[in-house]
Length: 378
Image (cartoon, rainbow, N blue to C red):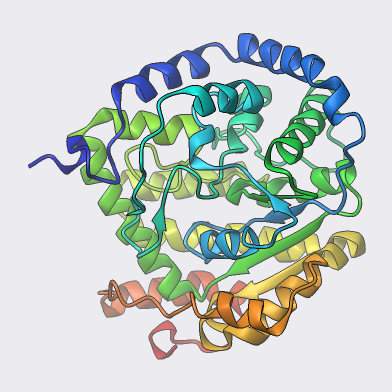
């Protein structure tokens, strides 16, 4: 059976979502225009809304960013995008107005496509703001070009649209603090800090061996699905997820030769090497930027995946404190109960693969406190 084409499957993409998604993806100019029309229509409603201390969760995929998003979204002051906001992400009010008046159906939570035990509904928080970035920065996922947007970036049209979009989302969801998960925001932190000097960044990291094993497992899983149903591939491309599957892409952190080496390794079947290079490249960029910018360092909290699983209450307390979200002990304990070490897969790397991972990642891994030379020992 082709599970991607089974309506009960988390991989299922309906025909209407595929067609509407194609229109949005093909006509960014129209949807930006319509988004501005929406802003004008809501001018009186959003005039008094201020974007204060927006919270951004950003880390390489499979580092714990989704569970952090779901937990922070439990706070009654936060507002974020939801699965139901796609495809027309650029017009959140118009689309939600339509959804509220369309025929409502009971929704049952289903495990998301990653097969990692996280169940979602159309109202669940999701990383969708990437659609906005792609609409304004066409090369933001091109490995040939630098994907970095830094403090020197000058994009007034995007800045205005983005600010208004966040205001609309806060008004629509009744929140006071914008919350977003955006893995690709890794290369945009300093630009975001320029837009919002009081922004708070939460950056999950994960020990290289288990992280690479998880990335590879997801890549194989999504490749099978994409071969079965191209609609699933198109969906991921349109929401801006290029971490795994048939359109996997390296993140260019400003070193074009390294991005090219990662893509070459993947094309030639050296997946572990490519992923190890990706891990090293992304995390080196992160720690280098944190060391270079005191303002960014002050705004950022590194959250190790292992600490999140092993000491969830104290780790989550640190996260909420950093985000300046007041919470009680019961709230933290309830949120911590959702965390557990993954048990849905085991890494099957041979000695050569482990040696490759260690050789490529250790010099950067130690900067995050991962000090063992043998990834298998962790």
